[in-house]
Structures are given as C-alpha cells and as structure tokens.
Image 1 (cartoon, rainbow, N blue to C red):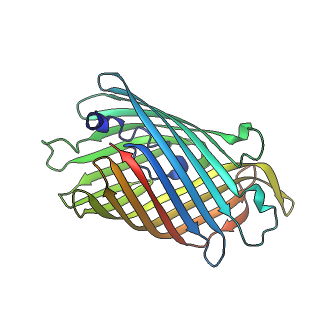
Image 2 (image 1 turned 180 degrees about the horizontal axis):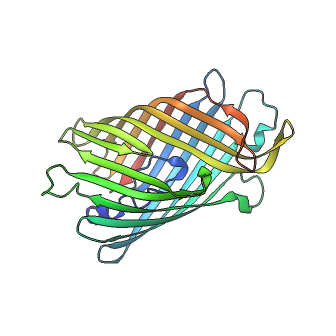
Image 3 (image 1 turned 90 degrees about the vertical axis):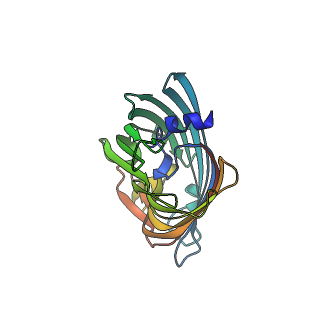
Length: 294
C-alpha cells in the first residue's frame, strides 16, 4: 500500500510545512532535533519537532491527507538583555494539516491544503493572536516513475498563503526535481534546493541550500525602550552537507550540517516592525533525526 500511494500524497502539504521547514512531504512520521548556537555567545537556539501524516483514499486517484506537527522551540538566552528573558525562553508551534489531492489528467495532479496553526509562548490561556492560517494550491506533474520519459522529473507549480510571512497576498511556488542517473539527482526550488549523490541504494550524500525559521506570538508582552513587543521571529538561510541512511526500506536516519549565510532573530511589535534584534551573526547549523517515509 505504501508504494501505491507514494505519488498520491507527494507535496500535498508543501505550502503548510511549518516555519519554512524543509520536510519531504512523503514523510508519514518524523522526529527531529535542530541546533543553532549564537556566535561569540553562550546563547543557543534548539528545536524538537514531531510530525505525523495519514492519507485516506476517498475514491479512485483522490486522497484526503490529515496530519499534525508539533514544534518545541527553546531560546536559551544567557547574555544580558534589557527584558525578562523567561517570557520568551520557550515557544510552541502546533499545526493541523488538511490536504486533498486528485488527478486532472494522466500527467497532472492538483493538491489543496489548509493549515491552521497555533504559535505562541503559551505562558497564559489561549488568545486569538496565537492562531494563524496558512494554505496553498498546487499543480504537480510527476514523471519520476514514467518509463516512457527519457529524463524522469517532477514539476510543482502553485500559490501559497502564509499569515506569518507578513505579506497579505498569495506567493508563487515553483519546484523542479530530476533524477539524472543512478548516482545523481537534483532539486531546485524553495524552501530547499539540493544535489544528491547516491553512495548505494541505502545511503546518499547531498549539498543543500534551505530556509528555516518561525514566527510566534508573545502572550505576556515585553516593553523595551518604551515600545511593546508582541511577537518573536527567526529566519535562517543555510547551506551545507547532508547524509541519509535507509535503515529499512521506509525508515531513514539523516543529518544535515552547515553554516548560515543569513540569520535574523528578532523581537517585533504588533505591526511586525523590528523592535529588538536578538541575533544576526551567522553561525553553525545542525539538523538530525529519523523519519518514516513512503
């Protein structure tokens, strides 16, 4: 069954992966740890992430995909700051992923998704500002398994809407994947681009460039230099090397390590204007975990 639905659920959730994350959307389950230390400081950012997706066949070539994702983010702030750091030391991001996909022709498939999100410090009861709504619509041409295709590829075109991005209109999405030969493949797009080299059927190396980060509401607002702070955000662009190893056909262990070439960790007001910069120095990046994929 896993093999038969692998092409069906591919990329259904691509517009709602949390915090600009780089998850492969054929993942049914994932447990992950991320770590970014602050340069020239004892401060550090860590994240623990758990993901679960479940596809339900509604009729021939049509699937409903239900999923959930939990992120626990720790801001370990050891430097001196002009505010109470305990109010932002822990951030939680909780996503409900609802997707639907259906075929429109032999080559094309449409995917729709809705992604309600709670992102907050959760230091008090739930508030309306803790809720965000994301979603997207995608057209997918997947010919990676097409034996008649001279150069198998997968092309995804779409529009995504993300309330945490601060842009009040849908943004275009483009992703292109190609398996060049038995040893090489590449993927170009956002939030991740990579070039993979297959050491064997069970292991592979890759170079990658990706985006990561989060945006969350601070339930107990801070006041810095007379200005109220209501939100905290982190945006990261990182490049590096990765390794994946197939423990079984569907169970994969992985590790990605690199260095950020853009890092912006900021406290913001209610209009999302920058009030106080926690960090903007590029740093080491590590992400590792285990996933069960199609």
